[in-house]
Image 1 (tube, rainbow, N blue to C red):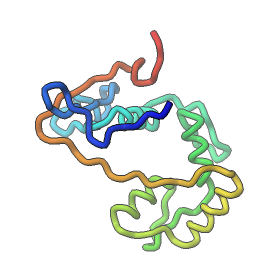
Image 2: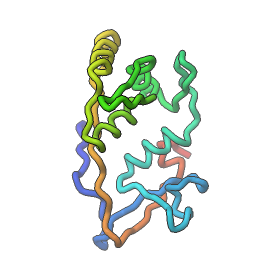
Image 3: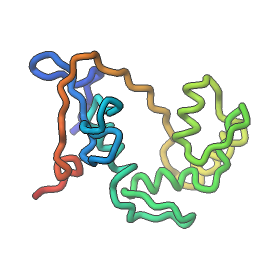
Image 4: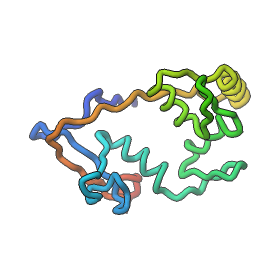
Length: 157
């Protein structure tokens, strides 16, 4: 079965965009965080945030970093130990931060980083690293949606 996500954000039956908030009260993405509260326009971004920021990290790499899922650990291992360098000279600890920097500044990866990532990819036999496009923000009118933690993580109670 192939699932295809809609290009547009989820809209309620009243035509108002849906915002998803983190269930962790102290998080800036929680709805009770106040005026500076942030949100996610899609459930998949909330899940990604929760797994990267709040979930227990039981999958460890030999370098000492730990991750909440095998998939996140596998993604880390693709660049673990690789010097991630931008053409401007900035050095990054994670491929995601280098990708974001390059996308926002219009820079590219340093040729040594590209060579190192290609060598690592061929030695691991994994899929290519991809850059996600930026997310557009919803309009002013919003319907906030709170996802219970068990549903967010796919746990049956």
